Image: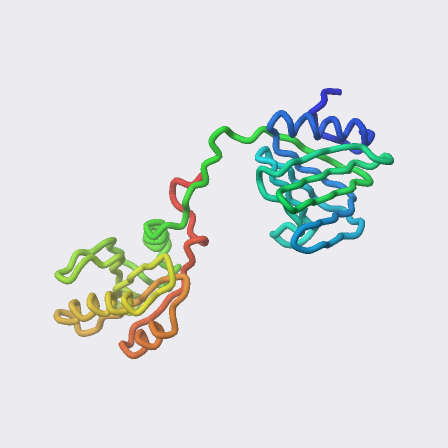
Amino acid sequence: MNFGDDVTENDSISDAANKILNAHIAGNVVILCTTCVVKYIGTAESKLPPEKRTVIIKPDDSLLVHSSTGVKPVNWQTSKSTINLRIKNENLIIESSHKDEELFIKCFSIHKSIHYMPPEDDVKAIVGTENDMHNAIIKTPSLIEKGLHSIEHEKEIDSGSIDIYAIDKNEIPVVIEVKRRKAQLKHVDQLNRYVSKLEEKEDDIRGILVAPNISSSAKSELESKQLEFCVLKPSEVIPDNFN
């Protein structure tokens, strides 16, 4: 047995504790499935009864306790905490302290623990940019509505650059203005300027404002201008170079 290896159900508490401790000291991420009780002492005091939970110990000494549901941890300690592991009465005790906060985890049984070395440069890529939204609409116009065709990206006109210009299924030109954040009055004004300029040469022009959501004032103004709104969230858009 190599201390720092993954823990299996065949390992004793002592062997499991040594593996977990050595993996953490070596800078590994430790993901531990354990039946445990959890006690927090700090701004308040809480205790979780015995249950199977997932405990994650990260190289920066942050610690998270997850239940079997939800995305948020039920308890956690911030990075740069002090973490100690010890055996008491054949139970593994994990203690994490930071300033006036303490988190105690008593593990009655360890079902599994995996350890891995994180990459040296774990860079978070920013996805779902406004340009990603443009590309997604160009590639899949049905994100806005079925039947859009003859797509032009960043069409230049006298009053500015239209994000996306298209023709709908009824052969009516459509001006599409894309915003990554909540649509505001100024965005309605921008779309309206583009539509008004094109109406000097075309009888029918549709304008669609695309954003994850819209303010109430912008929505009212949009309706008064007989313009349209389409919901598209940046988080739902996958960029072309995302692996």
